[in-house]
Length: 127
Image 1 (cartoon, rainbow, N blue to C red):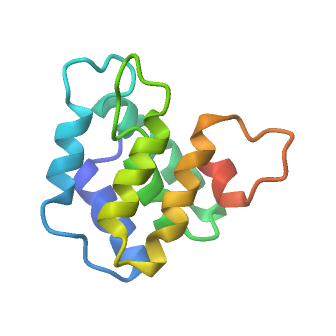
Image 2: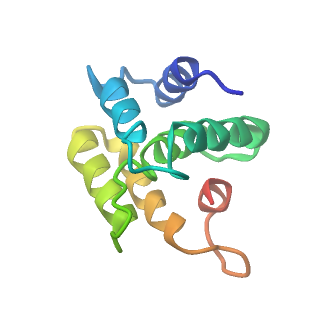
């Protein structure tokens, strides 16, 4: 299982950037919310572990990793737009990071399955 701190550090290193202070802890707390049964910290770890096995296929591995970190950051069990809200959070937090903007766009691809569609390689890896 991929350790979260090392995955976080590697994603930002791939981007050539330092992470915003406190963001790691905010995301971990979000994934630990009690209403989560599937979209939990365990789910995030599993996603990151699977990504590590396919990292070499990514065009921009840091952007995919950051998108994975945010893809289920907002989770309301009755919510219909959790991915959009997660992407909006990423956009707000990462607005000053031009290299992170593709991560925000990639989160939207988690709403639907890309198979059979012509999605960018990074979107297919994320999904």
